[in-house]
Length: 208
Image (tube, rainbow, N blue to C red; front, side):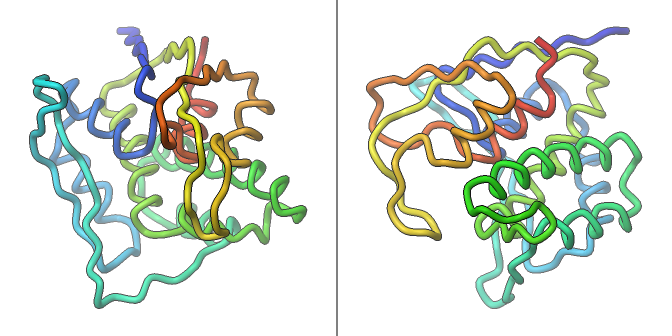
């Protein structure tokens, strides 16, 4: 059976936002947890609960890190090897790699280097790896064949990150949008609505 997902990104998109929305569509929490156990990552746990946004009930997924566990900085080559060497289901592995490849291409352009040696900083952190793999697991569990994303709504102003204060959209998001012909709509909302991870997810899964 063909399953089509329509992503309404009026409030932007990020990794944890995407996982939360997909879990609310009926993804097996057991499958998600079992797949994540196949990753050689430590010092984290996933938290799945409920929240209310403007009076609307919704799933809330996030990754909680153990502050006592030092997480390494990883480059694209290391992340690719981590995923390839894992026992993740094939479709999950392939989509996760596709998302990270989109990110690597964008970051390489930002930093003037090649993909293999791009250090992702925030994106290379364990929470972002878990977010991306979780999205892939959820889409696989739902057996999604088509993803429609008409527009990404972005905020305005600046955001503080590993490299200091950057304008919104941050360069990585701008590069992903341009390279993948995504429609980005600027709004009057102060703050970052579209993260590099969120933009990469859309670029990797969007079919129309």
